[in-house]
Image (cartoon, rainbow, N blue to C red; front, top):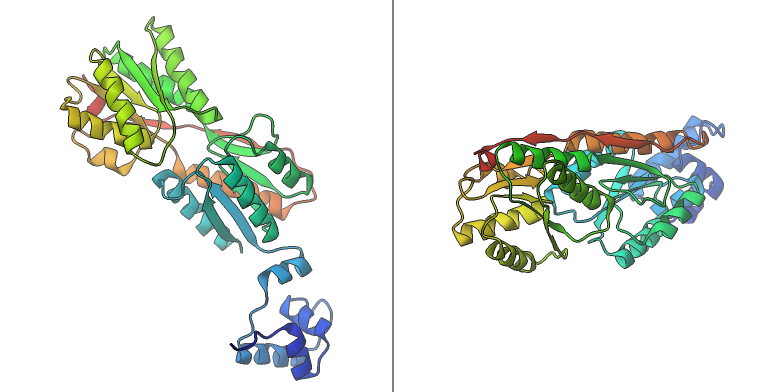
Length: 338
């Protein structure tokens, strides 16, 4: 195997000091008053031999890696995938590259990923955080590494976050169903202490109680295996044949719920009205099309990267954290109409 060239090798070949080579490769030639002729000679040689500097070593010298760590629950989920792509494009326009990964809402995996990003010397972090990583985030902040949460936040950690108005979103959706004459409305969601899931539950309950209706909640343990979501939904709908509407707390539960409803032969919306959180493409194509709570994906991505870039570009200003809450829209379709 051919040995990888180092700055030492280049310095010896050109009979130039290692320090001078380093200044040139790091774009500091003009600052250090290195002559154009020497700069051209070094850059020409580097191009000829195909030298690629070690990115980690370079970040240690410059104090910047021009990379951002993006950690989401599941990068294959359409919501996170779209946001990740928008953030990646905007970051690249500003000279940053994104390294992204999935946490699966697993605390240990998230801690391991934070350690990996630290070793890679990423400049900032964008995280949809699971619970249990508070100390790890505090450690990053203590080291002046900017962290921006999105989709949810950790109540005990004071750092920037971008969220939607989850509580009003489910309150509004439930109120729509009540306005359509529905009285036996269930909320099917994941069991979760995360802020966004708790707020969605509260919004549903508030709307039901204000109208004098009894809340009926089915919580399901989060799992990537659809069968382990489909079975409890099937059991729940079988146990409650008197339901006239269901609000699904996430797109994942919503898509599983539609499969169950089809399998059980339940007619939408004449027998059961349906609304789901997140306007998944499948919902628009379903017959009838599914009413959905649409998150402002472009605004979320734009807000997240704007906050982080601002932190990265002005690190010495000791800025106060920004807490941004964005509005959703209820896209009313055939699945919820009387």
